[in-house]
Image (cartoon, rainbow, N blue to C red; front, top):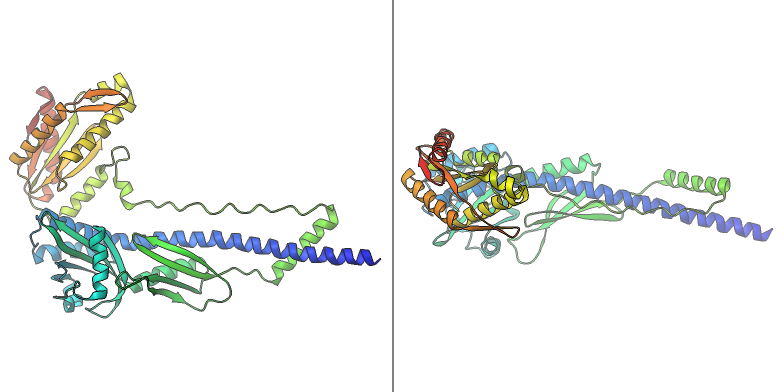
Length: 442
């Protein structure tokens, strides 16, 4: 009798332990899956905001590079900045800083107090600037208090270099309140009313924690995830899921019924295998040719829009690989693809990075040459044609000679680029009719 009572007591204890184990395991699975989804959505939302700022600074950087490092006019700056801030609503303002000194701001009224401010003079601010300079790219700094209006904001700071070396910076401003709104919307959608988001500011010594966003009060055990984009790294903290007494009672009764009905040992629950790794899709993937890595036609057209009101005259050329179909028919499409990749890489090595090269389809490529007169464009295309004809393209053990036909045309204004492209296509047709391996001008 005593043994039976002892057995029942031990059996109940085991059921309680099994119940707690099952509930804790399910809570852990829900926590991991839930947090993974939250981090993925936050990454996507934050990336969408900062992408606008990154693109804005990149466009202005290209304006400066195209102007060979010369100061762009205030009128051109305001036109470009106005279009960019209207196109990317989360970009509150854009600032031009030759040698680190604020020279141009848009909009002026909201930022005029920043004019003349030297960001390389302050020790803490200088740390953030050196991060941008040493990386030779772009860094996101903040949140910091803006000198022009006292608001908390993130600064997307891009370093600009010309042939003469360091030129200065371009900064795009995103207010902290825009980030807070996005964070709150994402977390509320996932059912989190209490949370804490911490990051650190590049403009300070050490990785000092900086409050990004918070709401409510965190209680009990916490789970944490990392939100990351570019050099941004934030730590998200939320409270763990804690199933109540009702759910624990239900699990206990189910286990008890299972033992009483079938008298089988408790099966071990397979642990969830973990969340899939998050895959980020860059905005420019939709504008990139998957084979060569060049811009595709959509990306090319987007680039043209960025040049409006920024660049005036120029030239455009269309390249076509002669008798490319014969290469495909004789050696197969894999070899043909290899020739396309080899040709694209060859062009990128020998064409100025101030020009825009894209693959428009098949064996046809387009080269946009801003601020290049038609005579110079013909000379550039002829030189490239001769170099291509002398190059042997090694593909899958084969050494193939490639020749190209080129049609080129000029334009006096960026609004004429599409019509110039049509003229270049006609010139290309004439080059083919006249025997190929030549450059024709329309």
